[in-house]
Length: 342
Image 1 (cartoon, one colour):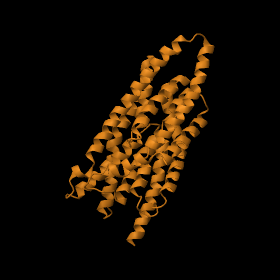
Image 2 (cartoon, helix red, strand yellow; image 1 turned 60 degrees about the vertical axis):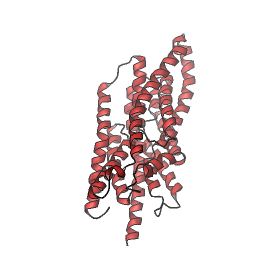
Image 3 (cartoon, one colour; image 1 turned 135 degrees about the vertical axis):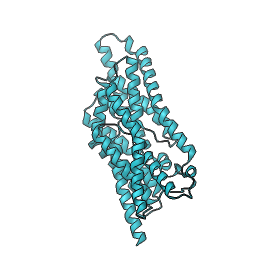
Image 4 (tube, helix red, strand yellow; image 1 turned 90 degrees about the vertical axis):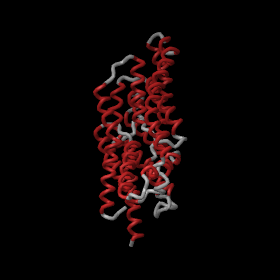
């Protein structure tokens, strides 16, 4: 009976992991520069971004999945229990879906790690014998927190410097509309390639749902079918971006109105460089933060006005994500625990 219940819970976890992957796709903002530049129809922006996201999830996500599914835990908690994972997933999904339909690019990484933090804190409080400092891998916690702070700043700096370089080498030397249009045609192709590359790395880095599968590797029915479920996660990430992600992408693209292909290329290149560095290290970051700060860096370089009202709304949600996800996750797990399910 207990084994049957465990199998049922694992199946529920798989379903929720698929929903989380859908939510991650719904909050993926990496196609924003492509949408802002308007080089292809919005529908094709979503399709191109969704394909890259799906392929990255399926084939390139293992390092980040291991980070989420195993490395974040300390020596006193060797693995997540099924009810821990259930609480984390429910919490993250609730918050991400709210963000998707509100048009706010919430961080799936922050949502999941906030939920994990809340669940583990409740677990340690309910088990006095566990040392709270041993519940987390301290080095990994510091590593991921520092990266969350540094990566948006790097995105800002890269986009600022890239614009200054391109403006000095090319844009300011062009004479006449024809020369400008010819150069922008070249950047159109560069933007399409860079945009697909960023979506691919975004799928590799947004591996929270794959991390849940990683934590369930030894459990039936995941054991022996791990890759099959990764493919399903990739498909759901595509669907999430195509169905729900359009709201976030449109909202962010409005912050870079009348963007030229060269400007979109700058934004995608900034995001690509950041993701290319952190993803092989297995560190999950917030792509939304990187993209938004890259837009700010570009606007700063061009001396354009910034929509501080819209930015302020995003920042408020970003700051609230960790504590809200932690509270939701902790309360859900506490409910399970009080009913003997831990």
